Amino acid sequence: MTRVDKLITKLQRKPAEAAFSDIERLLNAHGWVVERWSGSNAIFVPEDDPGHVGLRVVTLKGRKVARAYIQRVLEHLDLDQKGGG
Image (cartoon, helix red, strand yellow):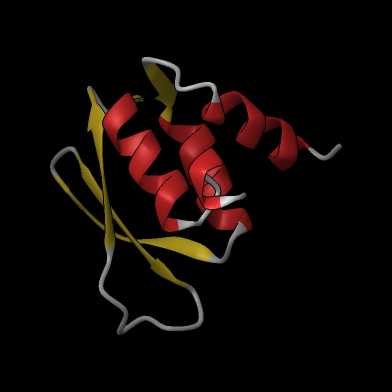
């Protein structure tokens, strides 16, 4: 089991919050990169399609990500448990 697989399993347990670095690692592993920051909002876009509508991840004090945004990321990557990921 790779580090990313372990991270997915950890995030699928629906923690109250997660480190932004974990969310960034997961998105980077799936080909998404930070396009820009706006305050506490990080906007991720697919590396191979910069014109794609961005995925916004809001941070708490720049370090943590709340459960709602963790779930949004998992759903967007089709890794939520309901989506069969």
